[in-house]
Length: 234
Image (cartoon, rainbow, N blue to C red; front, side, top):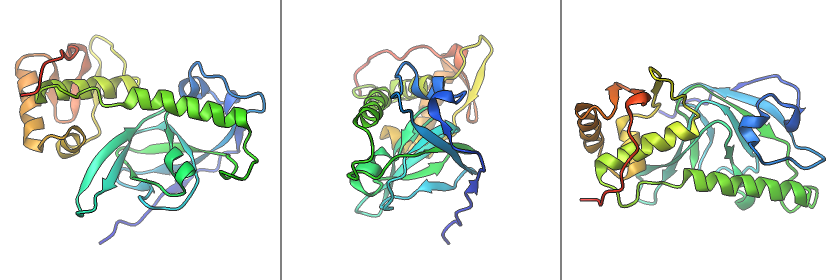
């Protein structure tokens, strides 16, 4: 039975992105055009709810404000794979805006809130060149950050690299006794890394045994995590 979509709409007035308290996290050092970009806090999703569906024809672009979305791709053989994650301060829907349909389903892994950006339809000639240039610059910088850094690593070091990458993108604090939660199942982590779920479990067990990190369910003690070393895959 298909899960019912229960996205909750949030009634917050449209505001200029540059005046938003979250602008620093969303845009970093990338300045907005003089005419600005407006957005509206559009929705809150519960864990498991989809925001966008693969093949959906819409040009809506979102900025993730809080939470984590899993990007799931349905393959031609009927299987699914985790193609990526979307985290706070990251654009979501640029591919659909450019291509006319979304390549993946974006599903909430935690409670998620997003802003819908007020962009003119592609090809309409109404979106300024300066605004589109900055959106593309931000997206290019985002792709560089999210590019999988685990190519050529062993299974254990691949898991470490994934945790490091997630922690960096999610702006996880490195307080001495700080903890954070990975909002993915072992199966989802394995799908994203190209590993079997059992391999992910063994890798986390080995890392815990070596005291390179502390694992309790989905909770990680980040202060004990050591940077992944580049070691060849077995």
